[in-house]
Amino acid sequence: MPAVNADSTPLATTTTPPASGRELAHQRRWWILVVLAVAQLMVILDGTIVNIALPTAQHALHFSNSDRQWIVTAYSLAFGSLLLLGGRISDYLGRRNALIIGLVGFAGASALGAASLNFTMLVVARTVQGAFGALLAPAVLALLTTTFTDPQERGRAFAIYGAVAGAGGALGLLLGGALTTYASWRWTLLVNLFFAALAVTGSVALLHRDRGVDHDPLDWWGVLTGTGGLFALVYGFAHVETTSWHDTYTLASFAAAVVLLGLFIVIQRAVSFPLLPLRVVSDRNRGGALAAMLVAGSGMFGVFLFLTYYLQTTLGYSAVLTGVAFLPMIVALSITAQLSNVVLMPRLGPRPLVPVGMLIAAAGLVWMTRLGLTSSYASDVLGPLVIVGLGVGLIFAPAVNVATFGVADHDAGVASALVNTSQQIGGSVGTALLNTLAAGAATSFLIGRVPSRHVLALASVHSYTTVFRDTAVIFVVGAVLTGLTLRSGAVSPSPTNPALH
Image: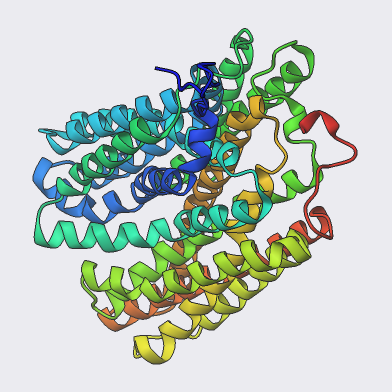
């Protein structure tokens, strides 16, 4: 009942209008960041957590060494090839809807994989995981981009995201080792149900319902050529690992990738509603940031995989202890991710940070080339590992921030997909290139030597240190590339590309 004054005249009732969905999202933004970090961590973890469990899974399901690679490749193929489409779908359906669908689908595929009775069932589950991962990963980054618009808060949020993106692989090694050792290889998949349940609950409670921001007709020719080209590219690099760079199928895959991706670019320039608007990639800073993600994705593979080999096969570490050994790198990475995005980026911009980060990571890898059969963790591994972490923290957080800065709301999904695509393609390149280099180095070392146990151990260490050296070169090339591409000064909307903003 309205209040009345002394002469019985009704007084105006003071009410507060209900907050809109966006206002509520802004009020809850830090809790939303927690939800998005959990969802992203689940996707990143899956790149390494299952790898640790592969030997145990192979023994349980009785599949061959040649088949084992497909457990990894199936996920990479689906994830890498469908990311652009996943970004477009998230713009169409709404990022909240895409995130929830992706989380539920990823969890369901994980449960299927954990219940696998044979190799085929596990491969199908990993393929479905990759497909739903390609839907939820762009949605996560697009939601982060549109939730945090204040420059200072954006820096903090992207520092946390960058730390998750950079450290997730090492955390996967730790968690995968613990679950495989103390529970079962099936728990490396079942653990995703826990992450997904947390993220879905948080998404339903915290994210406002959106109906999508881009309802333009779908560019089907772009979907076919873009998805097909990325599939052929990832498949080609995966095929190198089990054959060679000169294999007929490898060459055919790369040729198909060149043709299809070339057609994709032509189509994107010609159609009215492209799958990937070229305005998104034409910004100089964004191009440099995507190149940084490509290089870092490739280089980090060398650190994670071959240092894991060294710790386990040379120093005799267990899977759990190997994961623990990477923790100092995670701490160092998290520190510089916060420092770079919160303190340094607003003052200096990305140009000094990303190239310097790559040079620091390269220095740590050069130090790792001194590892030998009698090296110890405390004196020979810990120092370079921390230095690599410090460098990578200066790369990932600023690169992700810059790659999504100033993107129009309706382009946020596809821009986010490009970030994930760059990192995924970089990982595929690193997998093929560095494995090939390692195999070649070991073979060259054995020429003229009697292959005793000691000599074979020396050959293995030589292959690892060769990879560390070559990975350092990759980071140096990345430093030059990003130094030439990224703009100097604090990040601001591109004056030559107003359509982006």
